[in-house]
Length: 166
Image (tube, rainbow, N blue to C red; front, top):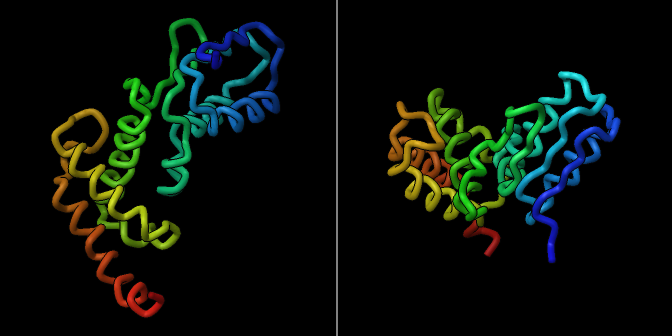
């Protein structure tokens, strides 16, 4: 059976150990709970754990973040970053929508689309469609149609290049 829960409490791990564990956690798709309390890690490692679950540096990073695990840090402090559903696809979609909606406030999504594969665009549209009916992932002040507009604006920019290549 695959490991679903891992208790690493009180193992004298330090900051460099936290980096290694967090990097491994990014690609892990089975672990649901990680207990990491009472180690020798300082407060600076909080960001390391957050990035493992939700790295908002790019859409690719968000898509590659861990979408299943919750991390228990200290006492009752648990990080989950929208990993509340058993469905990893739903968690991933909520995170993508959260990033798209936060960037939409300044209409800056298009400038960040350059590093994504064009094949991801239909998935982004599907995510926006699903999340527009939900209040648990994005900015409430952002309309889904505004995000779709930005995606389609980018799509219009790349379509001539796709036609030339094919």
